[in-house]
Image (cartoon, rainbow, N blue to C red; front, side):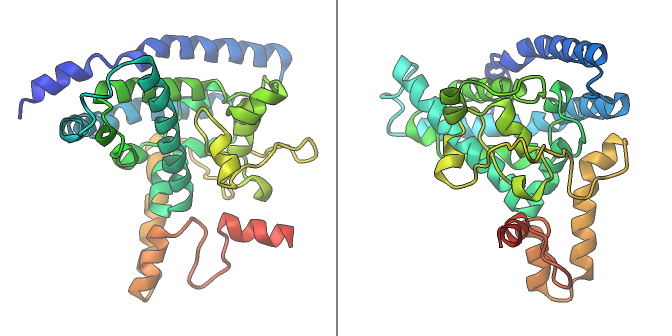
Amino acid sequence: MDWQYFLDMLKDDQLQIIALPIFILAIVVEWRIDEWRQLDLYKRKDTWVSLSMLILTGIVEFMPKLLAFIVFFYLHQWSPLQDVVGRQWWAWVILFFLDDFSYYWFHRSNHEVRFFWAGHVPHHSSVKLNYATALRQGVGERVHKYIFWLWIPLLGFDPLMMFTVLSVNLIYQFWVHTELVNRMPNWFEFVFNTPSHHRVHHASNIRYLDCNHGGVLILWDRFFDTFSQELESEPPVYGLTNNIDSYNPAYVATHEYISIVRDVKRANHWKDKLKYIFLAPGWSHDGEDKRAKVMRSKLKG
């Protein structure tokens, strides 16, 4: 296998690198507005952890991303549609919806499978919601992420095209991590993921747990019944249901994996051990079931 060949192709995936200086500028502007208006949106140590997660994620993601690109390449070569689907305008439109659909299930699985949650939880560990939090990506989730996109190259979409749309999706999501924007027009709120919808997603309130997983579109959440409206009567409380008291980037990135190992060790039966890995966070074999859907059911009851 010619690794250099694939590395050279992957070098054309530059959108996120190009967007990074714009992201940093947006963080500086939001931070200055925060200081001017005294909104308490930023905390220096918390922001440091967020930027550290960005660097750590970039290091960890390199090899999984390269391997995914190679797998996508060969799946595309095997596709009977490779000569039909090119880079026509309609192909980009279709790919946008396919990509966003895959992202929804990837993101939702990160909240509903504890092993996946362990890789995603750093993104939710901040008690602040700001543009720096958008860069506080989950480290471990980078390893399993691309599994959710394996079906798309079989439909004839080439890997560089896929990675371009993936980048567009992530760039869009950066802008929904803010408290400075209240609500968009109603039609926009109905179709697209917005700051209001994403504040719900980052909230630890029982009413809001495990809702609004969409990337660009919020339609998937509406269709699959994971949507929750932000209520003025219940402002979002950011962070985890049990927040971690640490600003150590290594601990922030790994603490849930440590908790899983601890829970697996104390379970006596293999069935329970597997449940600690594959059921949603909050399940316990000897205590209260604190999974989001269970607590929300009790709240409604």
